[in-house]
Structure formats: C-alpha cells, structure tokens
Picture (cartoon, rainbow, N blue to C red):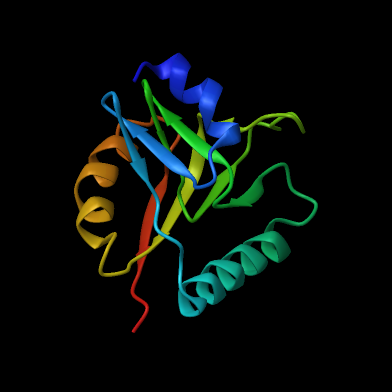
Length: 129
C-alpha cells in the first residue's frame, strides 16, 4: 500500500492502523489498565503544561516520521498544531505504555524511528506492572 492510499483509507478504517515501511499494521485494542495509565499520564501532562505553548495528545493523533505513521500512546507537541491536524511531526516527548503485544515494537522499531526526530527530547516507556 502506498503512503497516500494509507492516508486516504485510514479515516474510514474500523481499527487504527500504523503505516511502517509500506506495510499496514492493525493496532490491537487496549486493556483497562493500559487506558488508565495513558489517561493519567495525559492528565498530569495537561495540568503541568496548562498556559504553556506545548500540548499533550493521546493515542488518536498520528506521528509522522519520514514516510511512516505511528500512534504513540501520548505525545507532547509544541508547534501549535491546527485543530484539523491529524498528525504531529515534531513531538518533544513520546510516551508508550508497554504490553506483551507491543513491547518488542516499542523497544526496537519505534524507538529507532522516534530517535530520528530532531525535536524529540524524551522517549518514555512505562511498565504496566
């Protein structure tokens, strides 16, 4: 699938999908513990950043790295994204909550991709246990 085909079909997909090196990967639904952690991290960041130019976003905002698209659990972007934007390209912080099904990708493929971002100051992996 081409990058443009992914972008054209993603809004209509019944599941979120990441686009990595020309391949599309469906994302598994998260469990309650995962959602709770993501919500807590987002809430703390939102409170901390209130009144500042940076904003935290949860897992429905795509992250574009080169020609790939990911859905990090939480990211912080300081570029004043337009309200109609569906992806960030310059996050300062990325947070992934580890699970058995995502650990390997979060620790290898995603880490390598995220480290290519000049804007990134911190990549945080959170254990659920």
